[in-house]
Length: 122
Image 1 (cartoon, rainbow, N blue to C red):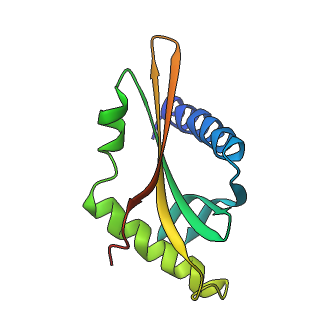
Image 2 (tube, one colour; image 1 turned 90 degrees about the horizontal axis):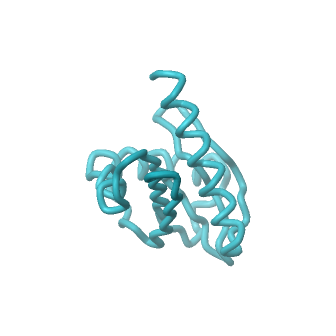
């Protein structure tokens, strides 16, 4: 992965994190990693545990950005979420998957939070 791409991803994650905080989410963990994979953010939205995938793209519209969380990615995120819940004794918790799409087009920042973007895909 190039330095530019890493930098873009970090910038998008910062924007997404601020948007989620503005919406009342409480961030629990950023870039949760386990042997199975990684989840960008783990948060609480009220009493719901939320696993958040953040996708950032330059020069693409939000619709194109959202499509990046395909069924293969959903399955991977589901496995990592289950591992997080198990390792933190949260298996009985209500949980959902949100996607934050960040599009950077001509100096504009477009950010969309898609709550309950997909069901557990395991």
